[in-house]
Length: 408
Image (spheres, rainbow, N blue to C red):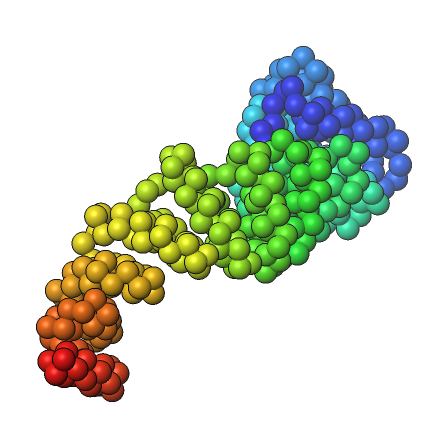
C-alpha cells in the first residue's frame, strides 16, 4: 500500500482532518484550544489547502516548541501527521500520530480513527507487528468493520506467517463483500494449505471453480487436494475432466496414471501413458517407460510389456531389466527368448536376483531341450540357499530325462 495524493486512503485521511477541526470548533470544556493555538492550527490548515506543506509544517513544529496543554499538543501532532502524509514523509507522519495518542487527550472517535491511520502507515513501512497492535485497538472499537479493513488485517497476518489468524479475517471480508476479489479467495486457499486444512481447501476450490471455471490451475489444485484427503475417486474424476480440457502437464498426467493404478485400472493407465508418450507430451525416459511397462504387466498385456522393457534395455544396459524381460518371456513359455534375456542378466554377478535368474535360465533351457545349458545354469542356482532346493529338483528331473534319452 502506498499513500499518495490521489488514493482513497489519502482522501480518507484528509476527511478525518476536517472532522478533527469540527471537534475543535465545538469548543467544549474538555476539548478546548486557546485562541493562539487555534489560530496556528487553522493557519496550518489553510496552508495545506494551498498545498503549502512546508509552511504548515513550520507553523506546527513551532507551536509544539511552546508550553501548551496536552490536548493542544495532541491536536498539533495530529495535524502535523496529516501534513507529513501530504509530503510523503510517512515515518515522520507515524511518529507524529503516535505522539498525538500518547497524550491520551484526544476525543475517543478521533483516537479511533488515528489508530487505523497508524496501522496503515506502519503496514506501509513493513512494520507489521507494530501495525497489528494499532489495528486491533481499532477493531475493538469498530462496530462494523468494512471488508477492506478485514483484508488489511489478513494481509498483515499473512506477512507475519500467522495463517491461523489470517483465515477468519479473509472469511469475514468475503462474507461482507458483495463482490469479493479473486485474489481474496486465493489468499484464503493459501491459508488453508499452510494450515493443512485440506477439507476446507477442497470446498473452497469447488466454489472457486464455479466462480472462475476458466482458471485451469484451480482444477489441478482441487485434484491434488482430493489426493491429500485420500479421496482418490474424486481426484481421478477431476483429473479426467482436466484431461478432456487439455490442461494437464506431464506431472499431472503421471499422477492420473498412478490414480488409475491405485484404482486397479492398469489398462487405462497403460493406454493413457502410451498415448501421451507417442504424442510427445510425456518424456520417453527410463522412469516413464518403466511405469508403462509395469502398467502393461498389471494389465496382463505381456507382449506390450516386453516391447517396452526391450526399449528400456536399449537405453539402460541394466541386468535387472533383462531379468524382468526374461521373467515375462518365461511366463509366456517363450523359452528361447527367455534364455536370451536371462543370459544377458546373469552376466553381471551384482544382479540382486542372480540366484533366481540362474534358476529360470536352467528351467527355460530344460524346456527348450538344451540340456547342457540347463545343467550349467542349474548347477549355478544350486549354490544359492534360496534356490538350492528347486535347482536340485530340476537337476534330478534333467538327469532322469538324460538317462531316458541315452537308454532309448
